[in-house]
Image (cartoon, rainbow, N blue to C red):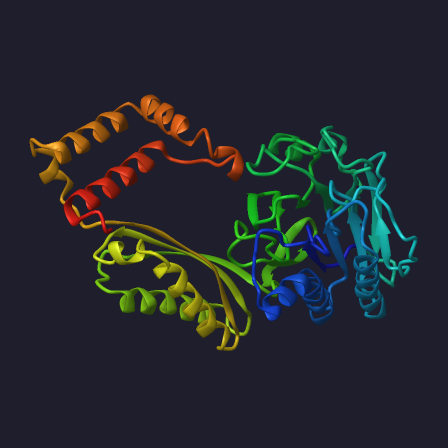
Amino acid sequence: MARAFSFVHTADLHLDAPFQGVDAPDQRVRDALVESTYSALDAVVATAIERSVDFVLIAGDAYNSKDKSLRAQLRFRSAMQRLDDAGVRVYLVQGNHDPASGWSAGLELPGNVRFFDTDRVERIELSDADDRVLCGLYGRGYRQAAERSNLAAGFRRDAADETAIAVLHANVNGQPGFEPYAPCSLDDLRTANMDYWALGHIHKPLELLDSPVVRYPGSPQGLNPNEDGEHGCWVVAMESGRVTGQEFVPTAAVLWERETIDAGPLSSLDEVHAAVREACDSRRAQFGGRPVVIRVDLAGRSETHAALVRGSVLTDLVAELRDEQLGIAPWVWIDRVRDLTRPLLDIEFYREVEDFSGDLVRASQDLCDRPAAAAELVDEALAGIAGAFGSREYDACELVERARDICLDRLIGGEDR
């Protein structure tokens, strides 16, 4: 007779991720980022033990590289041993970052850890210590990193399963921003007739279906500024093919955040300083006890524009704010402040003026009314420097308008600006 059970669903641990693109001279920030994936794994393990779950599912990419570092393997083994000591089993598939073909130090993992087959969909019947059936568990890992086959097509529920759970590292329905590895559709998943799909590969929490449950837990630790917001794992309770309880548990050791500040109401650099400080304090309070890496955009037409674009003013302001925010516990690292402000200009007024300023406004509007022409002009203007900055997306009309505003600001306010 089957009984109720619970498990942790996690994925994309990416142990030993390098955190490229963050230039933080402070040792505390660097150390926290290097340690963060391991701290997140520890939080997942602690959650499983504290909630007394029956097993943990890891849906691929436990490691960040197919040639896993020895440190990552040792830390992973230690975490698995803590789960083994608590009587918690672990089932995992390999993904594109940690395929079976990658290098391994050959460390022996404790007996509670079981990898799914990489050549076929493997079914494991789980029972408790009293031989009561928990569920049928299905999974298939990657043998090679670039898995282009539809692995989901091989999943089929056994008629004997009262509860069926599938574990897969895959891109379902072509989620943007991630490689189309093991591509499949929601219809493929429905056809398999599972009760719960424990997915991995997408780094932000994502719910695709609630019946059956089809879910990405996201990575336990955000890995770059684009992976902002809370990260964690799911604790799920099931019985007789139904989810009877579920909870998303935060595990990230460091949070990535973005903030856009409307500089329109700000009339001085003191007010800009206070607004950025308030944004940092707000995030600190929101994620109490955990450090935050934040990127800030200053936007809107503002009296502060002329001061912000003068010399090293913005650089000096950011340096002062960084020192201030690193001196508060928990620290907030201001990774970047972008000045997207524009001068206070009455564009409608200048549109009617019959002089060079009016010609400039009307010409820029004509370009924005013809997006292809605006894009061609901007591409031509950036052709000489684009290679130095790599491939970047931009809004051609926005760049045209910003150039217009800079020109108007200098025409009206003087060349010293």
